[in-house]
Length: 207
Image (cartoon, rainbow, N blue to C red; front, side, top):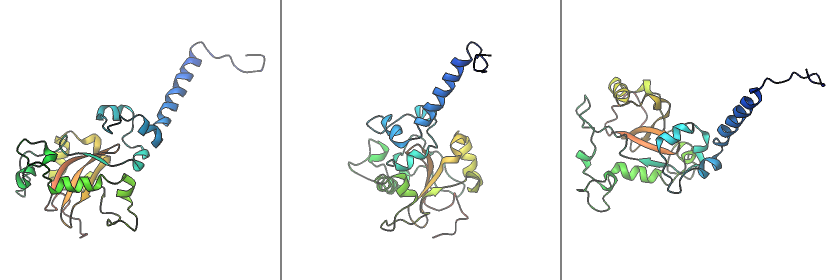
């Protein structure tokens, strides 16, 4: 006991407490939007490994950030769906500049790339909660529970090793039937499937 009635800390305990407090302060620092943006590269690109290491995947700070996208990294374009549609949308629309294909014509843009470039003009908050002046409706673009998708899509998601991204599964509405499926990591949307037939989530009734 010290002169003031407090127990004397054991050697090393004080140092452990300091380290723990420092770690907590660091984690809180990255939940602030301005601090998140400060630590992003000027180009706006950041590796998935670094994002996960910083525990930024679900930070609310992304809402104020500009939407960015990656059309190729996690795209599932092998084979066909059971209803016959090829997963490789380039075979239907042809290669465009978003595919980095040497066959693509200069400045060619497919409807998937056009949709994402339109979304890229907005922050995530504007996408999820558009104002009355927007041409979008609330609910046009939203998160989706993985268990609501068709069985084949759930199996494919697992086979692609995307289980850790289930909580960030997101879909963009291209038209009354067309949907672009993928997931969000911080402010980046990674495209996985293009569904022009509305088969991946067949029970949706909204038009």
